[in-house]
Image (cartoon, rainbow, N blue to C red):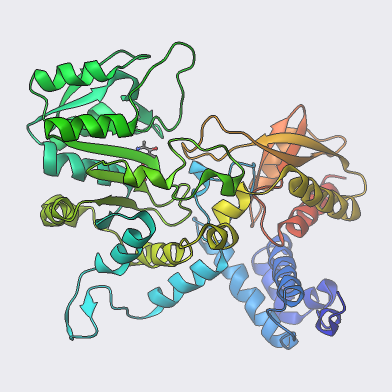
Length: 466
Ligand SMILES: *Cc1c(COP(=O)(O)O)cnc(C)c1O
């Protein structure tokens, strides 16, 4: 902790007294400017402590940077928020956070021009799809891969390319709706595929699929039931078994895996399951699709892997042009995939995985730090550290709970709903849950510097209300 640069970080009150800062306070609001300042100073501190920086910029440069951020916060509708819900892939909060290094890489690619569709070696036209295909093949063991706008798009393309006008067998237990807008039967209908429902809601046997093939089905389609489980008397046909049937009868097997997790489950401290396994890609399925921004921890994308002849056909489909991936997402995806070559590297560098891998003890220690910050800034806050059950979210791992910790906070004389609303409406919004008349800050989903922002926000709100 003995880093001399730490002592050079300016005091917040001195910075706030600078004439330019006072002007900004008049134009925007005191809170906006102070939040941005606090944030910036926290970042400086973190960078010094992690040896990413060994000196502090001069005061005028600091002021300049803070003012730039103040303007940014005020004018944009879409902006950064602090996620204190403990839901790691929060669908309403942008699913997977990219992390600083990936975001910097995206910014560099976006800033001027890039070789999105240009072959630099030959000076000829290139393909956007070539930037990540090899990485995906190396990681998954697949023969070929293509990346499109999102996983619903990927599912649509697989069905439209190979099952349009054909009968497709799907288990009744897998005709799901995900995220409120993706409904398997409707997407199938739009793709031109003719749905042949097999089995029942809770039980589907291999013989049900066989019957469907006997009655003229041409494709076997399996969907991961991402956001729910049927409990009790259930039976479904595993992917491997289904693929074996497909091979035997010489029909294609297509699998919508939903969340894409390519490592052994142990890296998250979870028991092995069919979903959490790289062996999925060795199951024999002809095509598999998954999301880029669920457990893979990257940007919004739909990834399709499988045999080269099939991927080539998908490339030629005009709908692929309509659903093509954007250069920014592609940049993020390449960065994430490069960091997914080994489980250890992934756990360290991909924020989604680091957060999910946090143990209960680590969460508790983090909660203690947050509680101390809160009590220091707002002595009249009533706090407690409580165990919570965090979630992966985003339709991933619906039955796996992640034991974590939260700080529950009450400001005497203020309803929890009021406090939560004031936190949400700040220039740097804080989204937290309410439990038994307290606001709960789950620490699993917090990032560096968020503790100080939360503590400052509570202090501001407490002062305003007195
Ligand atoms: C999440 C999910 C989708 C939708 O993926 P997006 O990337 O959000 O389009 C489709 N199928 C399954 C099984 C899913 O879990």
